[in-house]
Length: 544
Ligand code: 16G
Ligand code: ZN
Image 1 (cartoon, rainbow, N blue to C red):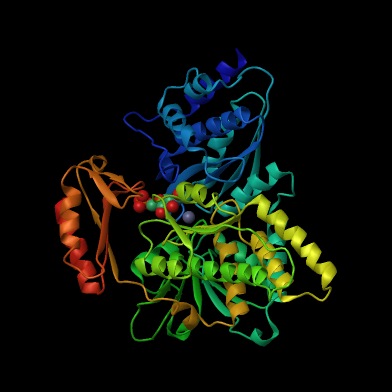
Image 2: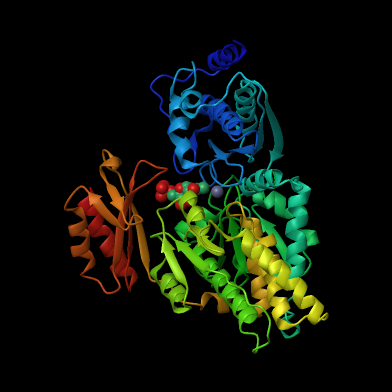
């Protein structure tokens, strides 16, 4: 039949190289870009099937390898809500990608009505990598192999833009790139209009390291419309400025803690931000002196802490409004971190009276957990994170805002806080971590508080930490539990880690197999750098 013929035809155009196995990991499929076409084509088939299964709701495909080197590429599928593809479909992704294509495993197991009348919609985006166009074509051929499927190429985008578009499309609201920009610019402007008068006039200058990727390109497009901010983009991806992610970008700055390419002693003291290659990670930094290349880093944990502090404050203004007889909000605010979160950040958040939950590494786990709250704030230390608002809270905020407007047309402190929360829900990407929207929220909050970079740094002091990679024969022998904080297998290893850790003040250490590289990662924290280094090293020896 027609469907079968099409699948066989596309499979013969993209044969699997022998001896090569793809596995849909934390970040989808990722490998050398030149070898990716068979996997990307099959991801196209899978995305179309996912859409068929979900009654034609739009799903997304992003072709990117994020912060990985320029020659790599990858593919990830976004679900109709704009989040990562549901985890129970990952085994289908593996089966479909590694199988010679005859009746597809997913269609059999999931009861997808193939061949009957159906429709599917897949939105595609890609980053600036040279293999992107070629892989996009492979994805299109995969999608078009499913009868009734319709592919829409959204162009070269940041990863979070594509996720946002998928989400918007399924909500029935405008979903183009200019709608995305309008939402960001509009809500940022509203945030600045709500800055208290006595705080206006803060430091507007900001330098952004675009990792020579798509984030810098998009920021250049909108920066003129961001009044109240003076943005200078470096590593903007322009011809000749440098190589994607090479000696620059959020991953480089967060891991190496040194000045990225493109910055000089003239930038000492200025607030700087760094995006990764597909602009779903954000960190901030500052060059403290011209004499060495170390940076003062503000990582995802401190961005999270700033967001948490701001939102807590607005909720408090709404709810403790000098005894006025207004309705208050019932909003559960929760924080989600991973074991990589600096211990000092967790302590700071708990000192604000906040509930902090932990999940394993990977956006799909954090995002899902954050949805348990009315306002869920999650971040990985590496700078990926966002704030998610429940539909119920949004409608509470909207009706409270209207109610308060009729009582005090010029706007009370309480109404302003409600409006800030609403603007925040518009500004921050609800689908996935988004460096551009995160950056604008950071900037708006710093202005609101009248804070310098230094004030932000001083929220708490990071405990010294060390990360090491250990090459082992088979990393899957290490199995973890309790959100990766404990090793359950091989037996005895956790006892050894505990014994080492007990030798240090404020010592904390865990090991886990990487989801993206063939290594075991060791993380250690202690009260001095020397101790953190030594703890990491001794635990690494036990892993080898
Ligand atoms: C991927 C994940 C990121 C995680 C990292 C861990 C997404 C979109 N990205 O980049 O969240 O921190 O993997 O890598 O989920 P690792 O397993 O090699 O330590
Ligand atoms: Zn990324």
